[in-house]
Length: 349
Ligand code: ADP
Ligand code: MG
Image (cartoon, rainbow, N blue to C red; front, side):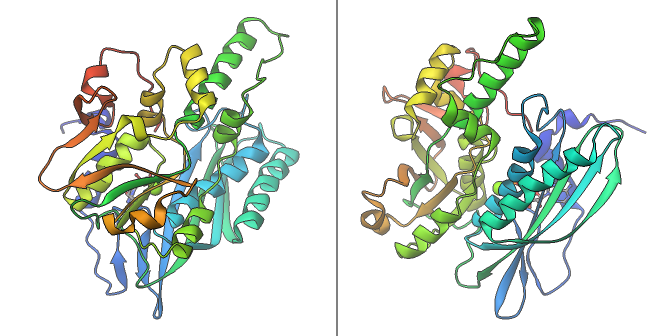
C-alpha cells in the first residue's frame, strides 16, 4: 500500500482529509467539524463543545513552564474557543496522561492551575480520564458552553465591507516564548547562570498564563455588537484571517500599520532581529478574538481601548496585507511573500 507522509498535508490538510469521511446524521448537530466549537441544539439554547490537547515537548516545555501555569493555560485555551462562538463556558472535563516522572505534588500543582482557571472562568470540572504515558505529560481538556440561538457566531458569516477587528494586542506570547527559549539555551550551555527575565513581565505572562477574552464577549454584548464572524487567535493572525475569509468566501485588506502590537514586543523583537509584524502574523497563542462587524457598527467600537479595526472584508478580491508603504502582499499563513527570504518565526502546531 502507498504511504503518504502527513507532513504533505499539514495540520489543516489532515483535518480536512479526516472530515471528508465524516457525515453528521443527527438533527441536533447544528455545526460539526470546522469551527472553534461544535454547535448542538439543546432545545432553547445551543450547546457548544470544544477540545484541545497539550503535549509535553510540542506545546510546552516543563523546564520553563510551571505546572500551575500549564494547568491554567490548558483551561484558558478551551474557554477561548467557546468565546470565539460568542458563548459562555460552563463545564470542562480534564484528561491527563502522566509518566512515573511525575509525583503527586506535580499533579497537585497542575490541578492548582486548572482549579484556579475553572474558578476564574466560572466553569465546573465535571470529569475526565487518567492514564499512564510513556512520553511525558499530556493534557486534554474538553469545554462545554452555551449560547442563545440568535447569538451564536460562526467563522463563515463575514460579509462584503465588514470591518475586521481584533481584541487586545498580538505577538506578545510568541516574543515571550523567544525569551524563554533563549534563557533556556543560556542555562544549558552555562549551568548555574540565572535566567535573565527582567523587564519581560508582560510577554512572559502572555506566553505562560494567557487569558481567554471572556470580557471581550461581554463588552461586545454591552456595545450592542453582534459579530458577523469570529475566531480566536491561536495560530497567528494571518492564519485566522485566512480562516474567516475562506469560510466566508471573502477577500480582505489587512493593514499592517493597524495591527495592535505592544511596545515591549517591538523592542524585544528588535533584540531578536525579528520583524514585530511577522511575530503578530505568524506567532500565535495570543488567544485574542478576531471578528468582523458590519461597517455601520464602527461608531460603537470607535474609542474602545479593547478593540482595534485592522482591515475590512472585500468580496471577489484577494486576501491581502497592505504594508506600511502601501504595497500589497498576498496574505499567507507563513507571513507574506515579500518576507519569505527573511527569517520568520514558525508556529508550533
Ligand atoms: P482551534 O484552533 O480553534 O482549536 P482546530 O484548528 O484545532 O481549531 O480545529 C479545527 C476544527 O477541526 C474543529 O472543528 C475541530 O473540532 C476539528 N478537528 C480537529 N482535529 C480533529 C480530529 N482529529 N477529528 C475530528 N475533528 C477534528
Ligand atoms: Mg479556535
